[in-house]
Image (cartoon, rainbow, N blue to C red; front, top):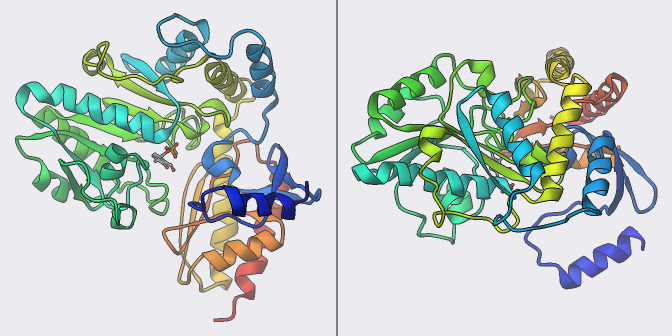
Length: 396
Ligand SMILES: Cc1ncc(COP(=O)(O)O)c(C=O)c1O
């Protein structure tokens, strides 16, 4: 089918809850994808952050192929080796005394952690959770209520009770919101959808101290930052601040749907049979894919690539900033790259697409790149040339 044929079917049969580019993709390899007409695109935003080791990573493809012929799905009433091995690998890489619950997406992982926080707070009458303005935690009701962005709540109210919002980076504001009914503080250590916002110095440490003082759980949503994106397995390891629970998804299984909650054992114990479940959670296919993802990051030594890639992007954009007054600020941590503009970013994204480069705009005016850890240096430079050309061509 041509792209036009596929788009016509979508228009008739697929609910229009996504804004889609008029391109039908049929194949991907590394940092490139191809459309139905054979046109190749360079992808600086592979899989919305899910394809952290590129499209169709060979070890993941092989692992899924092997697993699919053995066992596709069994429920969580049975033990399966890949789920056990994945949980062990996630815990080992965290250095925490923790256990894992597996599910299928980021929002599901956050539902699980919200329940876990409430289960731990309940005996003391605690149920409230402080989250941060401009956060993004997902679209199901618990995660949506945690997401402190009114635009995502509009028309869906009332939200789940018990969420209080503080500006990201403002420790005093969080301190003021904590009361005798608070059970947890939950945040992305680096805000992704909110515009690649880095935590100010001392902020995460301050939150940890606040949690310790009041007996609260500190929860890091690492759905976007986890699995090596920031140069360490988990972003918290960059900052030296241990959370009590971490949520994961996106890159966890190399592009295959998979989510997870990792919680310190003393909190995880509350998730007893009957409290929570996910039929497809931790299924053999997803776990085999996640194990192959971890193996790829280890064997190809990809963690150090994150910092190198981030610094290469920073150097290009800092140099461009001298010539391009549209660029307000450049925020980078590993392969999380945000370029804040003085204008709306969507037209820039569209112009890049015309030049066969895929990027994203978030928060209205922040160009967001989440490139793969194995993005080749020449592709990085070629994509930056396109962004540069597009930004310099904007008439002010
Ligand atoms: C930090 C963060 N948490 C949660 C989610 C929700 O993940 P999912 O779309 O897999 O439900 C996202 C998605 O962008 C995210 O960036």
